[in-house]
Image (cartoon, rainbow, N blue to C red; front, side, top):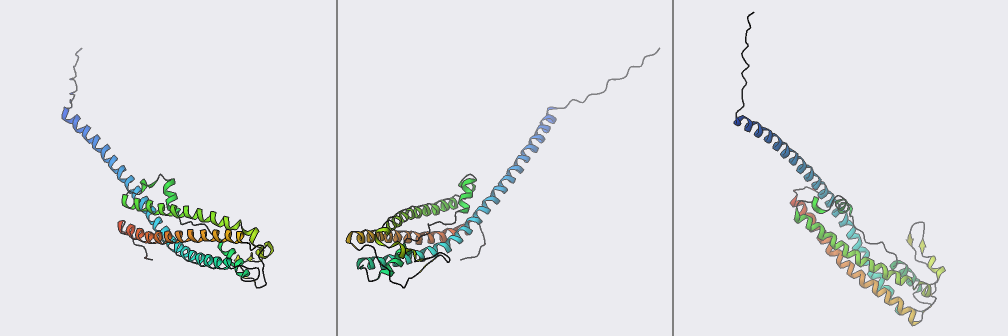
Length: 252
């Protein structure tokens, strides 16, 4: 029986150049994928940064209105303090008493200072200012809220001084008369026409009240000056950011 021998299949051996080419193609694919993912992450971070910046500009716009109202409030508080000091300095049981009650009730009525901190709180919760890639802008935001914190510190001192003045109420003012000043329905302070009376007009009581009002006035002036500077900084920071990010938002 005749046996036929089949020839062996010819096996093609890869040259080292082909291995190198395959490795290079694999490396290139991985590298390009890495670049694409990195670019995608950069785009996401850039979009997030821009959203935070737009939100911060909106906060500054809201602050601008609030700071203007605050300036008006502190102007009024200084006028009230001046009037109250003058009235207390010549206090008797029969003259200017109703005005003392009215101004006293107004000067101890106060809403704590608080700007719009929505964006800065979100940034801090999300990992801090590192999300703002533009260092100049990041520094300007930090500087703005540093000034806000300084005003809040003064605000805390003012609240303490108001509390000190309130502690003189029981010695100086009559509780029944004092209760007539507030319209709880409309949350307004009333001017009372019927005669009111002071409980005490001795030198020590009057002097203690005047000193407390003077302290309130002095701190109010400091806060007012700080608010003026903060308002200016808010406008400067706003325009700087709009220019840096080429944003188009309505000018105030």
